[in-house]
Length: 103
Image (cartoon, rainbow, N blue to C red):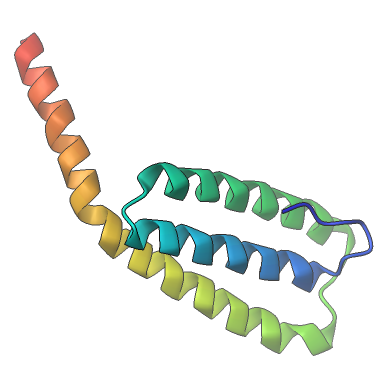
């Protein structure tokens, strides 16, 4: 999701929230490739927000909405972690088995 220069800082938070929701939906489908793709999109948006945040300040009227957006992002992230835990354990076990075969 590419944002234009006239977009407000709040629009970056909204875009990050949208990407985190896509990531959650992919995790619910167990589409881990899509989770990783969405995570990359989030990372780009976060970097863009950091860059813009150096030269702009979030207007006072947007701060409450930013807080609500951040809370939703954190809830999405928590659910993604719960859904990903079994998959991450499987990956860890695969690597552990591979390493034992090397010894």
